[in-house]
Structure formats: C-alpha cells, structure tokens
Picture (cartoon, rainbow, N blue to C red):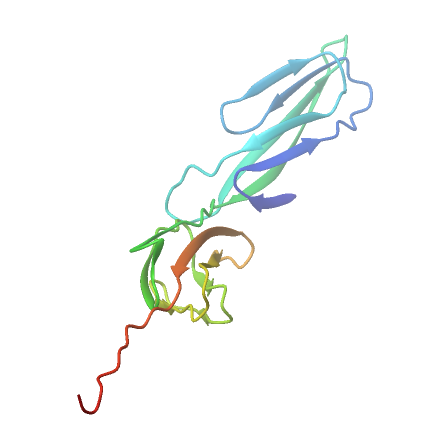
Length: 178
C-alpha cells in the first residue's frame, strides 16, 4: 500500500498531475469527486469489514485535458481495523477495602494493560483489583485501560475514577473489674 493507517483514517492527496484540466478522484468506497482544480483532496476512510482484517481501497485519479486525452493512476490505501477501548466496573465507589471487578468492553483489542492508579497493573482481559484507603478522607484512583490491536499499530485508552472511602474501625474497652 502507498498509505496505511488506523480507521478512521484521514488522508490528504496532493494532485501532482501535469497538463490536466479536469480531475476525477475515485476513493474506492463509492465516493467520487470531479474538479477542475488540482487542489489537494482530503478523504476519511473507514474499515467496514468488521472482522479484524485490514481493508484496501484503490484510489484512482483520472486527469483529462481539453482535448479529451486522459491518464489514470491507481494507488492503494490500507485501513487497519478501528479499535475502541472500553470497560465497565462492578463499583465506582465504596468503603475500604473495595474490590472492583472490571469487564473489558474493548472492540478490536489484542493486548491489554490496566493501570489501577495505585502502582498496581494487570494484563488480564477482565481483572479484579482491591483498592485501599487507610487515610481520613476519600481516595480517588484513576484507572486506565490501554489496549493495542493485534496489528501492533492501532491503540486506544480510556480512564475511569474509583472513589474509596476511608478505613474505619470500631473498637471499645471493657473494664477488667467493676
């Protein structure tokens, strides 16, 4: 391919044609633009396969002069599958110690790195983690899920805050004798 990127993939094409007066751009996805100028053309390509495979688009530029003479060039744009990080949690707030179960909702991911905001990490798809707070005010942990597609090119991240209320301990004394 002449260009490759993660979907949605925006490409700006520079028209380097010589001697043309009319130009037809066919982006290979049903979009066709006719223009009388050699201005750059920008197009956004979307991988619509939905199966995790790259999708190729044959982009055609046809240049035509006033005499009806034409010349065509074709170049391929490859769009890698889109990746969207996402997750859900069993709880976003609770008392110390707070166990949170994470459900990975990522589409297009292959590798996952969880950062729980307290120095702990995980590479599991759906991890669980216990958050603590031995202080006297709420602690907020920002959890980050970073995901990398199987092509090792496309990636995405998402963040969510988890609030942990302070440690509490009940206690009392009993007199030894009355």
